[in-house]
Image: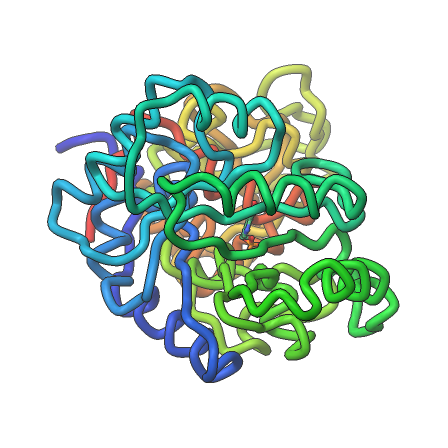
Length: 357
Ligand SMILES: Cc1ncc(COP(=O)(O)O)c(C=O)c1O
């Protein structure tokens, strides 16, 4: 029998979550964000389930090429664009769309031999101060792009820094206003919204929305659960108990004995640790499900194993099923307990993790 830990990817959950995007943004085209191996779910597996999306977005050129080779004919957008002039030949050959966010890229484009059909997403820095041209730079950059005969389509794009914080539109207002000032009267297609903006700020939907995390069934917010947003978890990481220990009062558990039993208790040892992608900094108390019942992680997570409290789960023993996150155990709850976000847990799944559908 193989080691019992695995990540099950639920393709119907991905499809469902895409339909939730459509429900929120019925007039926009949907660019499914499948960077980082589709947030850990597997690029081609996720693309298959999301095949009805109007486009895909990612950062990795090799992944974009693989997707095109697999037969997808939609827009495939490189969210950071190209890093070297040589990449433009592949972008042209595979008819990929590219972000342009920096003058270096404009210079590379001018120096390249690309001659036709380039689909450019011009990234504007409206306040996130990560990628993009400023309001002041924009007019000259647009003229340069328009003067380049290889450039066929231009879409204006920006990204919000604080759309996930609350319902309050102040969090996006300044960026939205700046974007509208820049884009106003240009009659070019626009793209702004990530999952948080799709769910809470319809005024940002425009021509293309770019959902990531919501497609995978996690919440971008701390004040609304995925279930409340009607999102279904697409990844369930499960394992089994491989040993049970009976502790006396005062016994310590795991490395550093960071947990000590206050009274006699049973603890389960689960096949799953930080080398599988479970966060090492998940403290005692992090929720976990054993035999379909919620309990808690106790002690320090080790490389390949972690401990769970079996005090109230008398029927649990070696071989009992454990859900680390996914169906019945929201990844967002585990992430919050570990001081991070669902995004990080999904993306940090270790290569050794077996993925099944
Ligand atoms: C430019 C851009 N658009 C869209 C997304 C999708 O964001 P989310 O996963 O929050 O929906 C990301 C992800 O970080 C991004 O970098």
